[in-house]
Length: 154
Image (cartoon, rainbow, N blue to C red; front, top):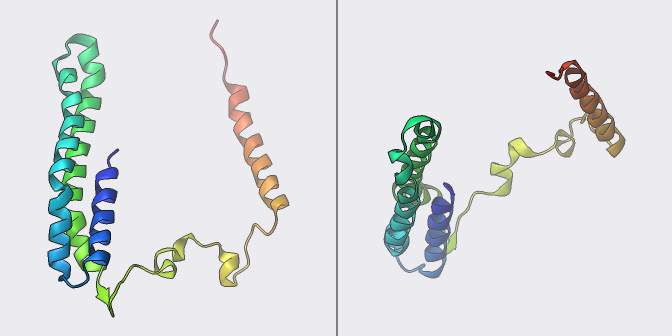
C-alpha cells in the first residue's frame, strides 16, 4: 500500500523516458510526474481519510486503535512525499539516456549481494537439496524444544 505510489511513479517516468526520447530527461520526468501526481495525491488522501474516524474513538478502543491510525497516517504521508518528491529526483539521477536508450541499473550491479556464493566460484554450504532438507529438519527440531517447555494454564 505504501510502496505502490512510488512504483507507479517510477514506471510512468520510465515509460515517458522511453516514448519521448526527443525531450530532455528533466522535461520527460516533469510531464510524467504531473500526469499522475494529482490522482496519486488524492488516492493517498482517501486512504488517510479512512482512518480519521479512528481518531474520535474514546476509552479502551481509542487507546487500542489510535496508534495504528497514527502509524498508517504518517506512513502514507511519507509514501506520498517519496512518490511525489524523492522518486522523480532519483529517477533523474539514475535513469539517464545513453546513446538513445534508457539506461537502467544492470542486474549484476543491483544483485551482487543476493547471489549465492557458489555462482561466484566460492564454495557454498548448500550444495544439494539434501543439505537444505537437513538444515530445515535441524531448525524444526530446534523450534520444538521451547514449544515443549510452554505449559498450559488450567
